[in-house]
Image 1 (tube, rainbow, N blue to C red):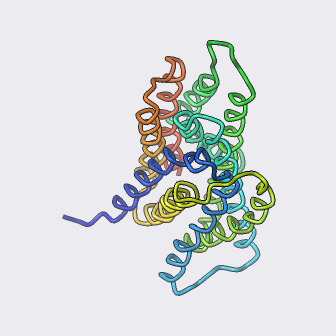
Image 2 (cartoon, rainbow, N blue to C red; image 1 turned 60 degrees about the vertical axis):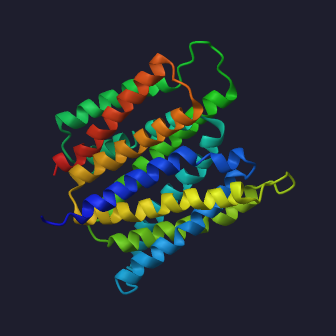
Length: 293
């Protein structure tokens, strides 16, 4: 039987990101600030970057275009991560992750407008489902509203846009840049924002420095970082038309299921419908770019 290394990489990404998403907010709940969780994440990006560069003989593309695109990709991703750690502190992970899984809608829109890519029927259906799902996530039949409810939804939308932009520029960069170089700049960008995260931290408040604080953050963020690297190799060895739907829809599904099991609740019918629409849209949106080639 012919070896399929891409499948192993894709499964690792899907499982690691699914578990990471479910537990991403736990360190903050335990008293470890979300800003410091970001710093931990930035540090966990270093070992995978070192591993990736070692595999290609420490070759880094350092021309002007590569630097600009690499840092742009990295800052959009890192900025989204910083917001995500705050979002999961104030909102439900079982809604946040399916929502941000709709980020390919932004990528597709930009690709159609700027790269002149043709939108297929699958992509059009995916965009429609995404637009239908969005208002359902913030639906509150009790009319309670509240700043927290609005906050997590707004932050999730910002992350959705940031990661959609990141994927677009990554798509542009892949024409001339190696995957290892892109990942290197992602790690560098993450570290570059770490001082800002430290500055934003209120050290006058009690901070949990125990195993269920930074220790748990390190474990969960290692899953995040390794998943990002294995995704790079999944795309290298496999077809994006297969890899993208598996990771883009599969990981948020795992996150939602684990979160709901841990919480022991069932979402309201309309929000459950929103989750289902988001999964369907994410799969179709992930397939779309390869159909337009």
